[in-house]
Length: 563
Image (cartoon, rainbow, N blue to C red; front, side):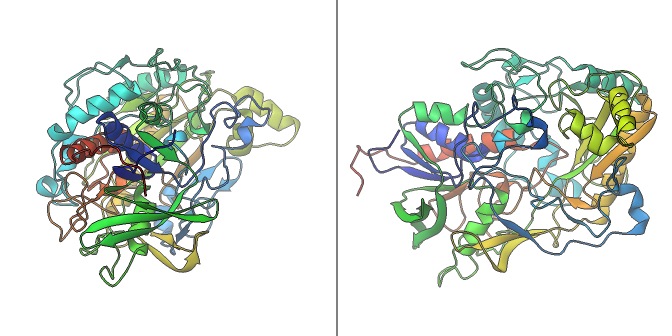
């Protein structure tokens, strides 16, 4: 579909925030042009889970589907933290130097129509209300300029569009409506983990998942292949291409332009006037009544910082000098053991079980900021024999084959994700010399773990090990975590929202404090990361709320031909 009139709104990015805001605005009658830097993926031809070499790769790469990022020097490792080093039985310690990014890029993302939701597992979490008041109630970080109650109706809208499957169990994230679909049954391995948790007093329940437990909205139910992160060929996973974008394009009011890399944002006074983007080697310019940036917590600040000028010497919308600051990364841990019972743990829905017992900001003794635990066997790629042979087992030739026959399906993994509090050493800036294909500076990631992060990580590791022991794992065979590797799937905070322009970039509706028609609807606006919640559902709810705010102030003119 091609818009035959000038758009009312231009959106940059089609991940969780860009797709959700584009859908809602088109539903409300506005004409939307969404510019996506990456390509389109075809769920039938690109996700090769039926090919013989399916296990050798992760989510498929296409031309332009990864942005270029750089890393500043990361911190040295301390011998006293040896118990937090990553290792596996096949190769030993997997990082023998200082902290580094995982095989570059350690920032996991997908550029494409659907963004990183194309390769995500599909957890659909609401924020813990207490995690939205970290400064007022716990003296750390920053408060959100809105309350959980302000966001709750928009969670409902997002869940219904996605078809989220979740449990009926009440929790602190109160709900005005039930989940659209019933929760998935736990796979055999996760049920085993949940039973083991009872011995430790832990409460496990089915995870809220943007994966269909029954047919919904013209999409089939999940077949439990365990490979959500390699791309879903069925369309049951709630990536934005088969949910928000499909409905937005069907409205006739939304055009998606792929392979369109935005390079320049033009302004006049306190307003954006146009954007320039490169597609197929040619620069194009589009006048922009309202601009929404949703390129993610790395590329959004990069665009703003790169658009410096005489009126914006520190970068666009950066009078506060907060653009790129307050980066919040994924603090994660995973322990894997082998159990005697064949759990068929390579099968099932990834991350189908979760424990929120330690999610509250005060739940972990000695630190502020919580965490969650989840089943993670499939999520970390233990779904085929190659992963077992190269990571979990020793031996060679006939002995390795025998070990593989005995071990396959017996791996059990416990994962954890924790709060990450802002610190002065963790931020994004522009690399002084490296340039991307369009000539813009490459975004550079700085990362530093504080003592609280390390203590929180140690609690996560210790609890995961205890849980595996309770589950009957006689030995550990692999552990990996944030202490020695930067490997983030969730990044937040580089353009955070707040009430004052002095210490934030946008207001509670995602609107720039300095540029009247500039909005941001990705995870860069998060003031806090939460105690392990996956962010996509909150990004989508915030984006829908922003769309409603924009629509209230827009008088839709009659259709006029573009210039």
